Figure 1 (cartoon, one colour):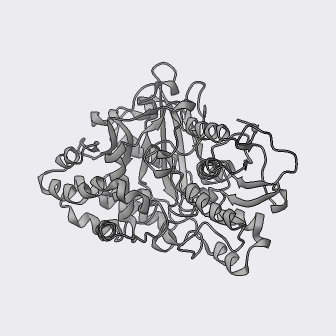
Figure 2 (spheres, rainbow, N blue to C red; figure 1 turned 30 degrees about the vertical axis):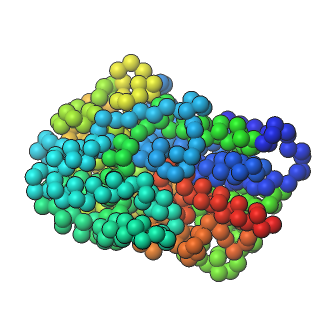
Figure 3 (cartoon, rainbow, N blue to C red; figure 1 turned 90 degrees about the vertical axis):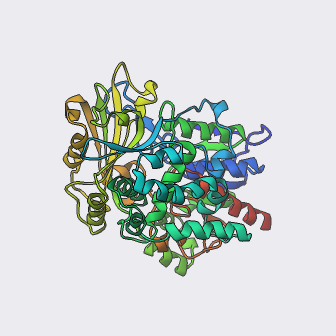
Length: 493
């Protein structure tokens, strides 16, 4: 999609006319903000520096002709169930989803695998008698209350107004605020402990750090609630559908329009930036207060990402055959092994045996491959800005649980942290989560504005990127919540 210059009601925006809102960046959060504002009847222009919309939601033939790979995000735990995505109808724009029979698989060295299916009880039964009850006791209530919990978990610091919701959140926090290394003490067997480790790694923290358990609980809950689906045709189809919905509402998208200075923006009443704090400083720093600029400079990035895209001549030959039904596979072995690898990364070192997050999109979506081929998407965490080549350690981890895997490889494309930042400046140093997600930055993203972190010191400037709550992931909530803040600002003008 290139340029659509229309407004709500079907009239064209006159040259030099003032728009209600300009959104800088057409990533998922920028598009979400734009949709919410346009849906409220506001005139909105989106400016995107790249030639296509999407940010982390893009797909392309990265290895061989006919093999469609996702540049960044591939699997979408919140793609159908976040409050934002539940508020938009994207099927009329051609978006379809594929849901794996098994959301998460986690192989072990004895040839078996732990798997997460939709049913909590069925998943618990695969953990062994000692841990089944504990898993049902912890995850069951979270999954049961998910629709009530989700709006508070996917937003700024929760401030529940009703006693019952306060009790739900307190119960969740009891398990979620401690480190994952505390959560696993509730499980005796290695199968449950390994499962928790893989899910907790989505926090991108050392598993000994506070709130790393929250990622484990949220990731496992979403797997039970909606199965971690993938967009048919590639992640880019989701971005295209969002853009189509926005233009249907009368919005304007201009691609190939990088913004480096505030005075490059069209005349507007408010501006929302789907950018990281450093870019916001570069674009609008002169308009921000000294205190807010200091807060943005103090914002810390998360670890980097080293990614492989692989074209295979057939499915991965997993020793645990059920992994052939898994959309996502967590590789790393036991809790202790994975915890050590993530601790090494947190300490600025590259582990010899990294945790690897692997997706198998073409097992579910044959539109992505020619003939009997397969696409594989795999990454590991590395220190931010790392220049180390982690290709071999990643391949070794896959081969460890799938002997003969290397023989299936037709082509490989490597994406380093530097490549990720060049692809999207929001991925600074390879950080795909918009900043470190530790206990402090979880609720002070990007500054200590707990009640409305989407505002800045300038009443006309807002930030809507993953550097605001709830952080990284394809959920659109940073954009949706920033749009609400923008509407309050517009009503005051």
